[in-house]
Image (cartoon, rainbow, N blue to C red; front, side, top):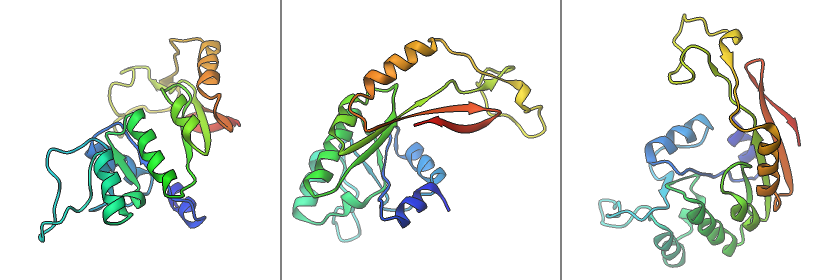
Length: 197
């Protein structure tokens, strides 16, 4: 069972807001166990041309204003989609506003080191996550994926930090002021460990 499936079985609808384009957002959604087929993704950036079915009807709108109009005049399908691409902080906040206007309780989980203060503040509940330094290969410095058969043991990994731990923590604390919870996540022994909430 994926993380997304576990949330859905508990009655929580899981949505991903990605600043990336459609292809990368679908890939991320697939990795999280979300449906990535037709009509599962909406771009929050207005498209030059709407996608239409054989009858000439718009399948899913793109852009905040078109989403708002679709929900008002046609149906609530754009509120039920799990993947949103081209989601800047401003567009994400506007989409969260549309969800809240339609009675949805929004919980936001995001990075403590990104421009998320206003997004965290708008959500009904928010959780910021501070991720420690990510280990990279000593030989290629993370420029490529490891290949099968290469020495990919834990000794080949190193972590480095340009910013001190105190500066990271201060930045995370300021960004996380509107949050109900703050989690710290680190990579230890090659695995993922949440070390504090």
